[in-house]
Image (tube, rainbow, N blue to C red; front, side, top):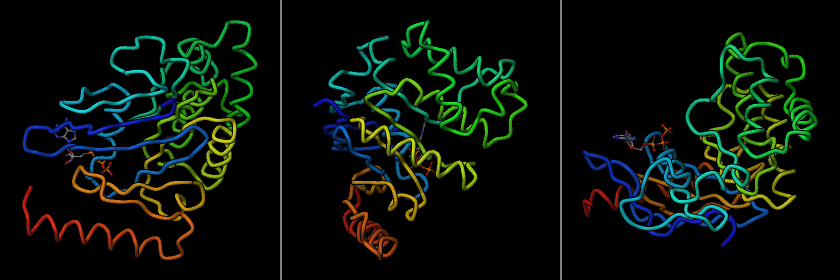
Length: 243
Ligand SMILES: Nc1ncnc2c1ncn2[C@@H]1O[C@H](COP(=O)(O)OP(=O)(O)OP(=O)(O)O)[C@@H](O)[C@H]1O
């Protein structure tokens, strides 16, 4: 399996929250959306997939590799933005991207063209020479996304990537992800915006109380209704049979 895979992935925090027994597959060339209410476990699952957390049981694979055991090999293969966009405040947008490109294994002579291309792709050209700490929240988010996408990774994991983006940022991101998927990347995104998810996703997985409870059809005109039906049915079932 060369995309993204979790099999029985479990990580529970003290108090019982977390994710349990999650099976998830994102094939190459597909955009897969993870949707769920606040606290459902989306970020925890992404952190497990990226090797930022260790599963207590089950396995995760990115591009066929165990993210906890692959060291720097994954840098070139994976792009991610989970939690806050990581940028050095004192460095300009361009310098941050140059550093990111190096960390993601882009060869030195190719770095300038790689950075220029992503500055244009995410509408950041005007901010290339602005220090990150002077950027607006939305432009810092664009910078974090640019850093995650610029090396054209085979695997992309983005936690609520449209956070703080204006409508033009949302469109630029959508186009960038569609291009990456068309070129064969496996893309996993979490989102609260079902209408945005419907525009971009090939597959939608619903997570609730730390478990995968089903999928939605992106073309469904009643997506919101279908989402709440799944969640309410799961909540009711769990009230009857506590975990
Ligand atoms: N380090 C931690 N220690 C204890 N509990 C945690 C920790 N990290 C997350 N949790 C809990 O695990 C559950 C899942 O959190 P997670 O952040 O994965 O949800 P989410 O679906 O991403 O939510 P949101 O949509 O609000 O971002 C929550 O109940 C959260 O409080």
